[in-house]
Length: 229
Image (cartoon, rainbow, N blue to C red):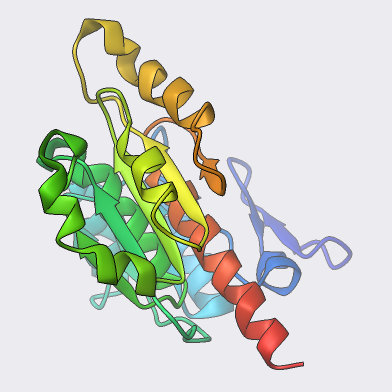
């Protein structure tokens, strides 16, 4: 380990042990593009250092390899997350994850799983897109009770703007690559969310459920730390 920078050089990866001290959360492993053995080695180091780890966009093969070393590791094939360990802090309040349609579930589940691993209480409301607005309005009270809302939508991405106009809390919008040709693999909802007429809507990248879950958690982290002062 580099004692000054507090990382370990594995050749293919420099494992950042100091990230939890800097940000409140350990380094998260982006699984896509890595080999099974690379993921396994990084998980081992992070578990030894922090007692918890998260792998995003992971494969079942990666999960099986990690479970040989850490049988408690949980793999969710929908979110493609491998989660290990418990959060250091449990945040007060609730993160509410909504998605417009069933096709958006993988991204919504990634957001929910990330926020939960980081210490958030998470509630989920799925398939409440604007094509059937009564489905969303049936949950008006739950929307207004949440601390942070994550809204996942493809097609034209209108759900985020609608939700943003109904609540007094931060809304994190996630465009998905779900839609037909002029949807441009998520570009259409991305631009729609970026130009939302509802104030208080923050937008992450296309299909970035992890980024949305992380953003919700650091908002909750700030609220918790402010309340402790």
